Image (tube, rainbow, N blue to C red; front, side):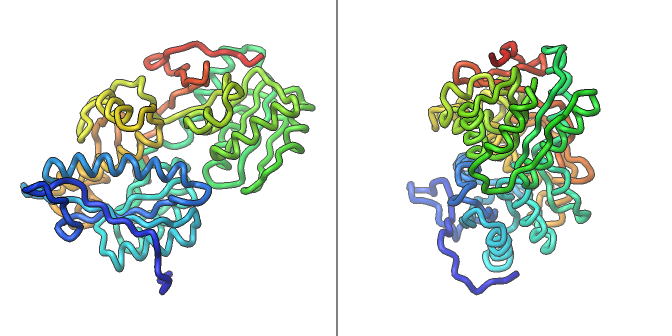
Length: 400
């Protein structure tokens, strides 16, 4: 997997100020964290969210003197490469980060598919890696125990949503499912289909579309012909914007339209305007929650306020989950009292904490513990939480 290609786009970040106000140089940082990021290409919007919150954390940690290891503070350096949304390149750069840049730990890229690729490299070199944007259980099927993830398994997306929608629409019967043929979107499409069938619903359309599809008209016409009560489409942001626009063009209607995970992202709502209203989804986190715990952000409110002050917009679950990964890593390093990779790996595996993002306790496969996930809906171009009851701030609107 080693490559002799020169890799442009290397960024080394060492935030904080030394005595006298001079920037801390990368050479003075004692802890090196590697991050292959898709800063260009189709996944750039999502990767930039990861980069943003990791920089926020880095600045706060280094401003406080660094991470405490055995009673001594160590500055932190983030070494990142742009892998241009190409999985093979992500693998090459992950190996380069470990073997050439000598990073101590890794942060995984966006998405289940690329996380699995990079996680395989990290596992080979016994380097702890934490993922913030991978929720498909098939990613976490490795037995070495070096890959961990802060998102709960996809299973929390399905049963609660089916139950909730049946309660809100007792006559709900006919369901159409259209999913992108890629690790996470495929997994969620299959998951909702299975959950709907188990609940006695008629999943009359259940198909996948190829990555890169630019015309969904054939699938949407078939869905329209079945007169659905609920349309469920999976994919990434641009896929879902396209699908929603084509639904409108073709007159495809249903009382319930769900897109995963589009409405969780502001880019989805900005790209659709009023067409986004009424669309439902699920999310792993929302600022309506109220958690307190360890880390540089002691509460949900603290993270939310700092983010909004910086970005002038609300964070989504990717921002929060990715910020939580570095909180977990810092906590594990401090509990291990060492930078030894195996000791830190063992400390990560024993994590049982609450953070601004919520509880984090890793199961045997390295995933955060399962839980019912919030159901959301776009209302008046904003996000409202429909369930669970403890974070609900609105009732569901049926699409007319």
